[in-house]
Amino acid sequence: MTKPVPDFSFETTAIERGYCYIAGVDEVGRGPLAGPVTAAAVILNPEDIPEGLNDSKALSAKRREALWETIHDKACVCIAHASVEEIDELNILRASHLAMERAVAGLSQSADYLLIDGNQTPRDLTLPSETIVKGDARSVSISAASIVAKTARDRIMVDLAQQYPGYGWETNAGYPSKSHRLALQNLGVTPHHRRSFKPVHNILYQQKNVSD
Image 1 (cartoon, rainbow, N blue to C red):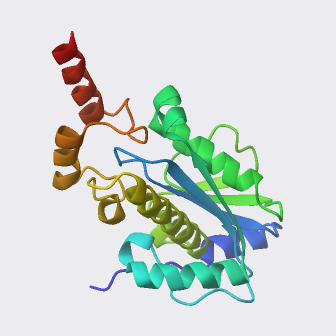
Image 2 (cartoon, rainbow, N blue to C red):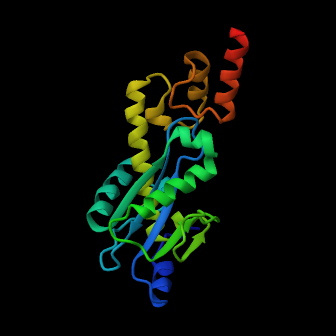
Image 3 (tube, rainbow, N blue to C red):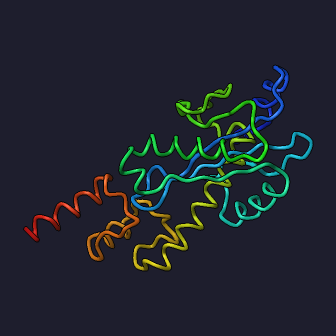
């Protein structure tokens, strides 16, 4: 059975209700042990929707890069982040919502309706909106946001991998792969690791006990 591909039906329904600027909103990076959480908001032009939009996880890196260019050419896009410090201070859910709020606020064309991936609306997004579970595989606007957010965050992690070699961030994007966990044990914790996440916290705790 072939997987359904995202379409413009959620957007069409909103347009029929009188909305003009519908933004898809998604975030990436809740699970990694290192790096920021990144969100994107994208308003597509209904007359010129890029072909091949899909859940970013279903696309190759090369395809995402090509779509990144097309989406930026044809749509209104904003990318935003919440830092490792904010993740540790607030918790990952609130930080990911903060990144989403920043992405919506930063759009050059203000949205009047939001399609938000997941089942929770960030508390400071007060525009009319709806949440869509697995929205990145159902709505092309959310698909576009997921592609932009993932590509942006992957680029950040590749850059950080140059500064902190050995953790494999250029391939694991900070997620807790076996090699990343091993590097944490052997190389220690960097300023870009999330100290509130258990594997990182446990290593810091072990180091503290050794030094005490």
